[in-house]
Every structure is written in structure tokens, then in C-alpha cells.
Amino acid sequence: MATTGRRAIAALGLCGALAAALALAACSAGTPQAARSGQHHAAAAWPAWSTLCPVQPTASLTAALARTVPASLNGEVIPLGMSADGQTAYVSAWTPGFSGVAALNLATGRVQHIQRFANPQDDQADGASGGQWLAWEETYSLSTLDDFTMYAWNSATGKLLTLGRSLNGPGNTPWPSPWHPPAVSGDYAAWAQGYGPGGEVEIRLANLNTGQVRVIRQGHTQPPFFDGNLVVWPESDRPGAQTTLHAFSLAAMKPAALPEVMRAVHGTEFVATDGARTAYLNPDMTSLFYSPAQGMRAREVLRLPSGDYFSALAMSSGTLAWTTTAATYVASTQTGGYVQVTPEYGDATGSDSAVMISDPSAEKVAHPVLPLHVLTPTHITWPSCPAARGRSTAKA
Image (cartoon, rainbow, N blue to C red; front, side, top):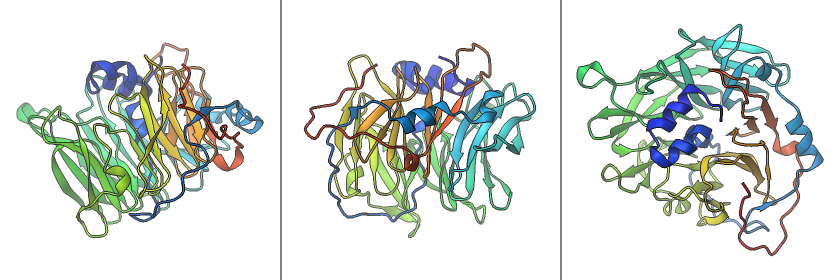
């Protein structure tokens, strides 16, 4: 499987022996998108489907997968996020004329340069977008991800902010940090970074309007995500112990209670939410759970066959996307039907308006061409699952 240097490093050390095979498909793809809605939602009726089921791709989905973003054929283009209107993708790119972070017009392939990599052979970026902001973590080595700078860019004004840098420990060596891009919601960004021995990690929250950064938690934490006006993160009492979720309110600027659906989430950092719908993986990364509302406990909606594992999870309007050790899939949360959208492996990045799918590359080079496709839910029709169907199992 072809992959970026960043993902290869993550597979080697940060996710452990099992995820060494899984993280190649990108742990970061499960980073949830910014939510526009409020903190809590009343329970809603479960959709007509109860478990996800495989369906045949419709003509509209087949047509969307056949279209490729022009610039993605000129080099390696890795999606970081998407603008609210769905017309622009934010990417890290390695092309003949430019290597760095850029805004990519999905219709024309025109590339707007945001920041060049000083050393394209080693520099990499991993990020997320929300509202008019893009935030990313830029690293400088193929052997470690612990040395980084955190940036944010305002797509409306073109303003570039430096939010912070990794913290050094003894010997002027950066403390180990969890591998994950920042999360973005409205005018806020949040991320996790190492600050001490024994796996101690800070959760940092930045006000992108003012540039002010504050530490909202220290401990054995994992990278945060946004759920409406909450910052949420997994945390354990000690290294290696199972995590539970904790929350911090942006409105009150203090710790807050979790929505009901998240109180049952343990032992996983793969959680996707849009402030209403919630999806997450079990600790073994073999089952997918889903809830249509924050006041409703999630159900297991997909269990993988023996020997297959999830490696990424993403959410977009009306859809879920995931990558396994076999391929990448997209499902409709309205009908419950899902379709395999890459021949094998691949990657999916969700946004408020669309899902971006990166095909795997057959090239064994440092920065292979990764064809990029855009699936807009409003332009795609989905077949429904049978009304009474037993437990669904994805096929490898």
C-alpha cells in the first residue's frame, strides 16, 4: 500500500503492533469535522435501517467516482479539509511546481499557495478545516513527528497564524506527542501535544480570532475533537489504561458534562460527530457504532469479518466513510446502504458538504500520484437496505 511518510511513521511507532498494519490508511482521517449545531439534542427516531448493508453503486455514485480532480493527477495531493461551500479542498501537495499547503479549486484544479514546505523531502502537514479556517500541524522529519509547528489560515482574509510549537524536554528533544491533526470548529482550534515524561499530554485550545492559546487539560489524554460547542477528548488514569471521554464547554470556558451518546464511548479515539449524529469504533477496531441523535445511545451497525480491521472513520452530510485493511467504503445514513469506493486501501476525508476519496497508488515512490474524487451527498442517490436484515458484515 502506498502512503505518505507521515502515515508510514505513525504505523511504525505510534499505534502499536496491530495498528502498524492499520495506520497506513491514516489514523487522522477519523478526525471529526467542525459542528455547527448546539451542545445537546433531543432524541430522534432511529432511521428505517438498523444495520448497514452492502448495496450496488447507483449511476450517480459511479459517475462521481469516475471524475477526478485535475490537480490530483500532477503529483501527491493529500486532503486536509474542505471549504463550507464544497468548492475548495485544502491539501498538502507535492507537485512539480509547488510543495506545501494549498487551497485547491475542485472544479478547475487551480492551486492557491498558502505556505511552501521549506524542505519538501522531509516536511509534511496534517490538518482540518471548519468555517473559514484551516489549521494544520507541520512536521520536519521522516523519522519523528514530535517536532512540529501549528498553523492556522483564514480563507476569507488570507491571514496566516502561528499558533504554537512542540515543547522540548531533556536534551532539547521534543516531548513525544500523539499523532493527530488539530481539530477546528468555527473560530477555535484544538490539539494535543506532549509536555512531560510518562506520556503526559496537554490539550490546547486556540481562539483563532485573537490568536490566544490556553491549556485546558493536562494528563494522559488523546487528541481532541469538537462536538457542537464542546471540546471532547479521550483520557485515561494512567498510560495504557482504557480511556473515557471528557468535555470542555466553549460557552462557559470550563469542564462540562458529556452528551448521553458519548458516555458509553470507551477505549477509542476514533469518534466522528457533527453535533447531532455520532459514530465511533470499538476498542478492537472491528465494530462501528452509530447514533442519529446525541440523546440516543449508539448501536452497533457494522461488524467486520474476522481478520479485517477499521483504520479510519469520517463523517459528512448524510454519509459515513471508513477505511479497513481491505478498502475504503462510503455509506448513506439515510438509507443504510454502503458501497466500496476504492479497489483496495485508500482514504476518505469528510467535511460538512462532501467526502473526498483518495485512491491508492500503484507507484512505489516517495510522493505518488493519488487520484482524488469528490462525493457530494446531495448529488448521489442511494438504494435502501431491506427492512428486516440481520447483522451486516463488510466484505473484504
